[in-house]
Each structure stands twice: as structure tokens, then as C-alpha cells.
Length: 154
Image (cartoon, rainbow, N blue to C red; front, side, top):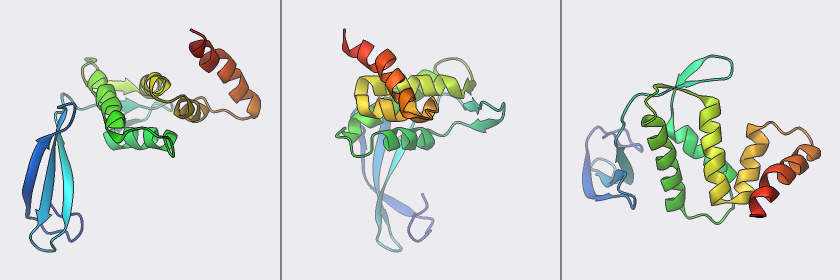
């Protein structure tokens, strides 16, 4: 594994352990060249996924992009990083086990919406505002009336 700090090709694994949900192996590494320490994750990948965008273009599925989009919604919210990791792992597992190698971006967006609704209502609203392209305050009000309050009234 290449060191992300100095680019040296040979690093040592100092510690390996499974993540909390056993979906990956977390490895602590040490660079023999610059002495930097860093963490890598090893995950099972069942199949190569391609995302079919709204404009009909295609791009490889990027787990890190999914993680970043959810993290943006959760910014300054008190959500345990391990819970976030489990949410992302769950979405990726569902996508990989769907049997499809091409996934519509709408499918991914709906899975994220569903996960955020259960995880954090504010993050759910933030994500929805971008995903559903809210343009004015009334869009927020309508969404809250239809989606958020209905779920909270159960």
C-alpha cells in the first residue's frame, strides 16, 4: 500500500481488526520511509456497479461519494460515525445484491432518503432539499407537511 503522505510504495500493517459490523477489515499502517501512520479499509465488493445518471450518462459507483453526500447532510449533527458507516455499508450491500450492475441515481437517492429519515430528521430534510431540488421556502413547508410530519404522527 502506497503511503498517502510521501508516496513510498512499501508500508507495514501494524494492526488489523474487523469493523464493528464485520463488513470490513480496518488496518493501521506505518510508512517505513516517513514514519506516518494511516488507516485503510478492506471491503468485499460483490460486483462492479455503474450509476445511470438523469442525463443518461454512466459513471462507476463511488462508495466515497455516497459517504460524502450523507456526511454533508449530517454536518454538525450528533450522529456516531459508526452508525454512518453502517448506513453506507447497508446501502452498498443492497445495491450489490440487487442483481443489477447498472443502478439508476434515483434508486440510490431514495435509499439515502430512507436511511436518513430513520437516522436524523434534520439531515433527512437537508438531503431532500438538494435531492428534490427545493427552490423556495414553500418547498420546505410542503415537504415537511407531507413527509416529515406524517411520519412523526404515527
